[in-house]
Amino acid sequence: MARYDYAEKAIKISRREFCGILGVAGAMLWTGAYVATDLVQDRTKYIKLRLAGIYKDDEKSRIRQSHNNNAVAEIYTRFAGKPLSPLAEELFHTRYVDRTKLI
Image (cartoon, rainbow, N blue to C red; front, side, top):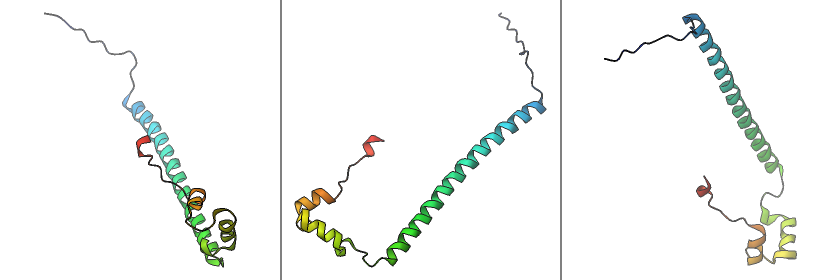
């Protein structure tokens, strides 16, 4: 019959020291989570303020639709001919690219 000897490690931590170490580690994790949450909330707040400013400026604007804007109409007459022409579609409109495969 084999006999197994078990020897305790030389380093012993008391229950009080263990709780202190866990408390410090927990406080560090809590602080990091709080900072990250605070950054996300600040970012969201700035985005909402920016959106409110954009809408406020848009409501003040006399021209609120691109097809009624004289500058856009001039660009169409100089370069693209008319709205929705093939050249206008190529120059002014975006194309959707499915990027879900990249995730």
